[in-house]
Length: 77
Image 1 (cartoon, rainbow, N blue to C red):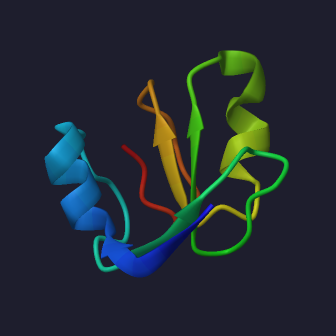
Image 2 (cartoon, rainbow, N blue to C red; image 1 turned 45 degrees about the vertical axis):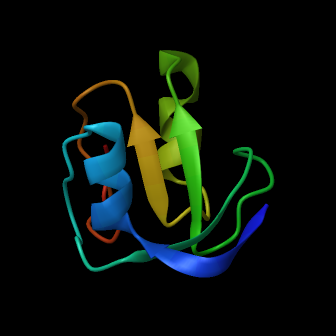
């Protein structure tokens, strides 16, 4: 799903109470399932089996339920 207007990742973190790591200036342009994400999208993962797939996907922003090492270009919450 694409957003009508991009949303700052800092705003998403503030709304969800998440800890933001990485590039705080990114803008989210959509949200999608791990196998359908495109650059600019947010993807969410909460099952360890899928951590690497999500972290290495095309998603620009990752919401994850564990403190893990993330690729430098992607913030995580």
